Amino acid sequence: MEVPGLAHNITSPLSPCEGMIKNLSLDAIQLCEREGNKSQDSGISEMEELPVPQNIKISNITCDSFKICWDMEPRAKERITHYFIDLNKKENKNSNKFKHKDVPTKLVAKAVPLPMTVRGHWFLSPRTEYTVAVQTASKQTDGDYAVSEWSEIIEFCTADYSSVHLNQLLEKAEVIAGRMLRFSVFYRNQNKEYFDHAREVQGNRMLPSVKDNSGSHGSPISGKLEGIFFSCNTEFNTGKPPQDSPYGRHRFEVQADALFNPDTNLYFGDFYCMYTAYHYVILVLAPRGSPGDEFCKQRLPVLDITNNRFLTCTRDEEGDGGLVFRHAQDVILEVIYTEPVDLALGTVAEISGHQLMSLSTVNAKKDPSCKTCNISVGR
Image: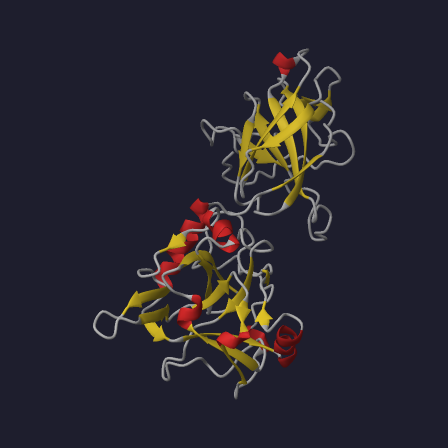
């Protein structure tokens, strides 16, 4: 279902949009505010003879679409001209105190063969729980509708971004990545207690944890991928890591080749901002064949470690043949390493700068209005 806009005239449900969409499952939408078991809208009458949809099934769920079908009694089936589909976000169904009762909440579809595809990025968001119920309706000669009782209410949850959507994000991120600067270390800032715990409880290792919900709402790694966040951005004038950090005054530094080398796969994870001029790119480093690598292979775009716009590892052909590392200058990289890291691989020291808490991206919500980092699906 591709729907061009909202119709607000409830006296003739299809009149604002009728004929605007060709060869699509749903032709228009309008308000039929559902309260109780049957429709209370003006211009809609009740008709016992119309069959109530039974055994509703939801399938082929994506981040911004789904298919719906149901069973109906054969009687009066030929009289059905339309379906009314009541779709609501489960968690926010009654939470918007500013919502006027005449705000459209129902999809009105011409009766087409089932299953029917419902599609629309402006009313379906990824990773969101919805409830859906269905009525059958028959448009009368006077423009009113005879309707059945409402079906049972079904719950479902939309999916993560697909590879198509992630590649769209990737292409947008590439546009603003900027030139590549050399770097030599990955670093991770935390408080002193974090590193003490790693030494005393975790066998001198930093262990992966589940990624939080920062970034794009549809990201397939949020709340699922386990890893350790590292940074690698450097200051332009020094070529070294900045002395300030939002995450703590103690910093673990490790030589870049310990985490990033020809035996590592690199994946693009996300692109977002937080209502500021700064843009963030999430990348995943996963040793080949590791559980993290297998997880990412099925969900994320893989990048060529020697030739991409964000983070590269190449051989120094003119020097000693060692590895050379570069990062993008104009985006802030958040690098997730999917395996445990031994503190013995690097050093822990206190930084001389400040802990800038305002720059933290922990559970940060993406700015849905930013044209630079949003794509045409639910945010």
